[in-house]
Length: 395
Image 1 (cartoon, rainbow, N blue to C red):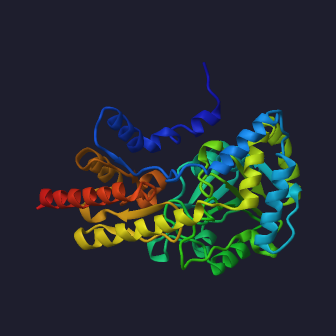
Image 2 (image 1 turned 180 degrees about the vertical axis):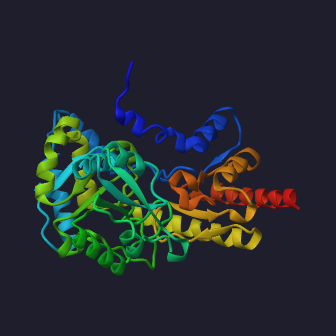
């Protein structure tokens, strides 16, 4: 039997990138004492008021069909939020609701790219970006994010890769996996390129509420001159510690959301009303857990950087936001992938190889900052001991 071309395009872009994570889970199930710091799962449960809101909505009969745009109350809440944040009117018709950021990205890419198109995206990138781009039929064009530039995408590097086939730029700010944040100057320069070459800008802003002290977030949605070409995607997964509820959205030009509506209706016909009601409460009330997460993740990143600098040759890139820190392991002589497997096998710590996020991070690994402090301290100590053992083996 024959499979479709989309399955060939996506071959190897799914679970294969999570090999270390899956292996760690198997070892833990076998009783092995492994500390898993691979995945960005919030370190607190979903707040009780949100659980209660979802339960109340279900008991009130909010379990019926929705529509392709999403529930009116949630779209109104999101329109108000983005109007306040951007400083310009955002109408509810510019908002579409989806089950999580991932589904939003899939739908948006289907709406802006197809076979014969190219989509530019920073390398490193979140592990599913290549998949959502290739699913559309478009080609992914990686743009290297350089450590010396703080892993922020450069307008010059973008410009060097724009061709007549380029249709969109996929940005992430704050960035996963590096935790970098685009500056106003970055956004202005990138926006000028998008205008010059008539490109869409898709901005994944799921970590917007996890900005560490001393850093400032700027969204391309706030630039009036980019109003007709910016599409923002986000969700409550990180900000409200609610990843399992799968509640996300996109915000873009009204003409774009109108054109995308038939695709949304074909895919899923809206998210669940009771989850929409919970999400509306989350948006209107703000997050009670984000401030604590910001403080803990920043402190753990600093702890990691200090301890590894003091007791090993490993170097940490300090994130400005998010749930992760990057460790440069090139001093070990191993690739990030080999290091991650060696650390799991001999150090009982599971980290993500940088190569899971692109070729630029071949000599790096990503560590999640989302395990509780005592366990995180233990992971740091194991990484230090493993580095010392590696050094002895190479002498």
